Amino acid sequence: MTEVATSDQLLVVIDPVARHGDGEAVRIAKDVLSAGATAKVCLPDGPEEFDRALARRGSRRPVVIGDDRALLRAVSLLHRRRELAGCALSLVPVGVGAGALTLSRALGVPMGAVAAARAVLDGSERRLDLLVDDSDGVVLGALRIPPLGGGEGSSEEEAPHHRAHWLRTCQSLVRTLAARPARPPASASPGPARLRVEVDGRTLVDLDQPVDAVSITPGGAGGGARIEIRPVSVGAEAAPLEAVARTITVSGADFRYRADAVVAGPVRTRTWTVREGAWGLTLPG
Image (tube, rainbow, N blue to C red; front, side):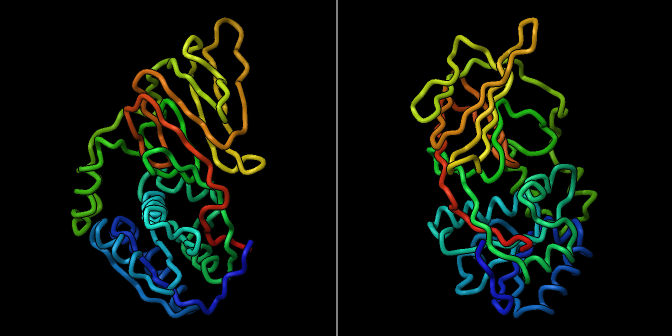
C-alpha cells in the first residue's frame, strides 16, 4: 500500500443522488474533509457535469461522495482517459436503497460518513485489480452470469431512466423513488444457460454442459481473476468448476451479465482481461 499525504488538496465531487437522498451524511462528510484538508467541493447536476469535474481536477485528489454507481462512473471515466495509473480515488459511500453500497462494502470502504471521511484523510492507497472487457467496459468487484438479483442494479435498457433520475434530483426523494421503473424480484431466475467458458485459451466448460451460474472476480492469485462455474445438477449436486486466469472468454446464445451495479447485454461473446493493480482506492491503513 502507498501512503497518501494528509495535506493533499481534495476535489470533492458529490453525486446528486447522494446529495438529495441523504443530505445529512453528505454534510457530515464535507465538514470532516474540509476540516482535515483544503477541499474544493463540486455539486454536479448530471453525469456530464460529474465527468467534467473529474476531468478538470488538476493536481487535486478526487473524492467521490456517492454510491457504487458513482464510484463505477469515476473509475470508468478515468479508465477511458487512461488516467487510472496516476490517480488514487477516494470514496465516502452514501447510498439510497438496498444494494446501493454492496460493492463499496466489499472493497473495504468504511460504512458511515465520519469513518469514511477520516479514511480519505488518513488512509493509504491500495492498488486493486480491474477487469476490462473487449468493449472497454470495466468491472471493479464481481461479475455474474446470468444476472441474478434484479433488485440490486439496473440494466442497459434502463439507462435512459437512470439519466432522467439524475435530472430529477431536485425533486423529493419520494418522487424520485416512485419514478424508477419496476424491476423483477431478486429471486427471479432465467434458468440454465449453455455457454462456452474459455480461460487463458483453455475450455473450462462447453455448450454441451448447461450451467446454473458463472461468476468472475478480480483479485485472484498471481494477478488473475477467480472463476467459478456451477453446472446444472442432475440428482446429486454437481461440484463447481474453479479456475484462476488472466483472460476469460464467454460465448453462446444471447446472454446478459451483471457487472458490479449494472446489468449488460445481451451479447453472444465477451472477453474480460485482468489488469493487475490498475486502479487505486484509498482505504484505512
